[in-house]
Length: 253
Image 1 (tube, rainbow, N blue to C red):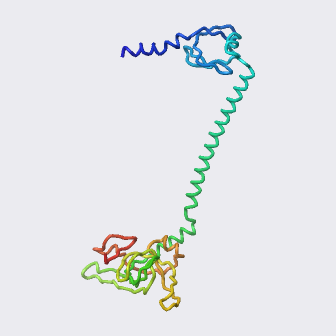
Image 2 (image 1 turned 90 degrees about the horizontal axis):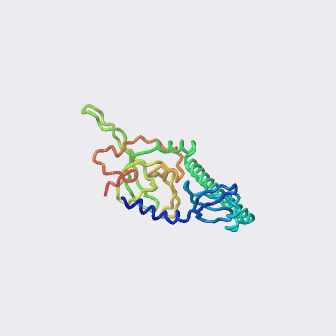
Image 3 (image 1 turned 180 degrees about the vertical axis):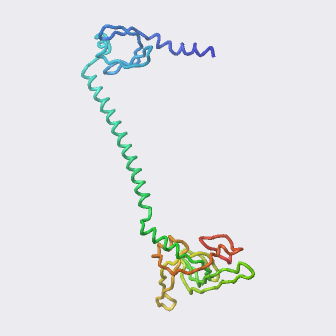
């Protein structure tokens, strides 16, 4: 620890050794070390710290010693002002760009928010959800063709209660977004998605009801929330049902 003051003194020795008496334009003397010479003044190390003294504030002797030229000094000052103005302008442009980017991000977020009409339409679609058992007949790249049934009612809550369960067939339908092969059985929730048009093996055009596994999928295929309201039991509430898979479960796996 005793070596630190000595080391500091050794480092400062060159500066102290170069300190000299410098005269101002008013004749006063101050002691300082000239750090560097610039066209418009001297950068000086004094006891108070490092400061820049303009040549107009220094004596004629110092001006001659460092070849002071007022025209070069003014050009140097103008160059400095221009550089600072350019830097300030660049900073302003960066700040404006950041504000524009933030504003654009807010606009994008607002644009992503559904309109009241779209939100109401989405709510209607969510309310048309139906819980089905689908006997898959054929799988395609877009979805599957299946025969649908729903279970309504509830089992008896007590020994004296009434079992109101019943199975209702919805007929054949196309389910967008569902993967499966013929012969498999799927159980889960679906949303009405209009109608599916296809060509039969005989080359005839035909139509069947369409459903989707998600609200977004239903919207993508033109659902308007006006699908049939079919009372059904949520398969997830049935004891022993396997885990959820895209809103439903392939029972055969």
